[in-house]
Amino acid sequence: MDTRALSVFLSVAETLNFSRSGQALHMSVSAVSRTVARLEQEVGQPLFERDRRRVTLTRAGNEFREYARRSLADWQQLQRKLGSGGELAGEVSLYCSVTATYTLLAPILAALRGTHPSLEIMMHTGDQADGIGRVLEGQDDLAVTICPLNVPPRLEYLPLVESPLQFCMPASNCQVRERVLASQDDGRIDWEALPLIVPERGTTKELLDDWLRERDVRPQIYAQVAGHEAIVAMVSLGLGIGIAPQLVIESSGLGSGVDTISLEQGLPSLSIGLAALRQRLASPLVRALWEVAGQTYPDPV
Ligand SMILES: CC(=O)[C@](C)(O)C(=O)O
Image 1: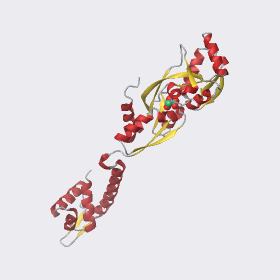
Image 2: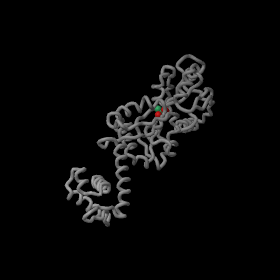
Image 3: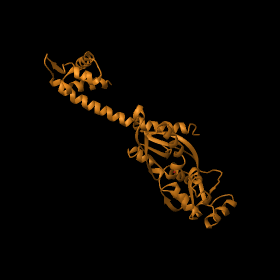
Image 4: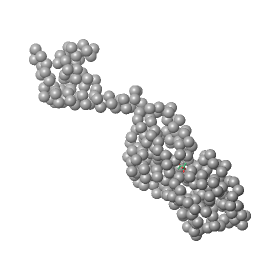
């Protein structure tokens, strides 16, 4: 984009004097004339009328002045947005669970501060199960989420880490724990006798439902909860057994409050990663975060 030519034109449109504009722009009069002549060629019409006494704008020149002002203003705005030296600047909105902010995301954001210091993250936290819906509806550019069983075609998914989905029980002595331990001694857990704290919605709920159905277990649901952190918290209080990704159990700060229940045929491992609309990945800002995330976790399996 030849913004220089537009600036020269705007100066002449202002001074209506080629030599005065030349002086102001530190250009020779002939260079100013050549620049204007080139623009007139591109437009296909004269922009100025010149006679020996004065210079005036033609009608096309007046129109072109509006265009040149708009273009230069847009260009300057874009430059400001991109920061000096073409650096990416602007906001990306990201949805994730509280756990994801201080586990998965912490190293990604640290890397971003080095590579793209003017990229700002607008973070929204909540149940990771809502991430896919929020991205599909355009509420957020990106979400950290467990890979859905079926990735919608409009969506791109970038796996970052794997974490096994685990059953967990209270770590301190209580009725629930005693019952789990007693039934474990018999070699099998009586699932129907244990209060179960389960996810309200999302992939982990679907996986648990499948797991229970395959074993013909009709569980006693104690509570349906939004967010794995809430499940772990309730389990640590002795209210029941629950499920959560190992990552959430380990980093909950309540880690010592819950124990994982080891099973021969437990729940499947989960892929946790980033989701975005394909279309949104065309934005350089969204793409930058995506790429830095991929570099931060190069080997997700
Ligand atoms: C998907 C995700 O962000 C976690 C950390 O696994 C979760 O919150 O469940």
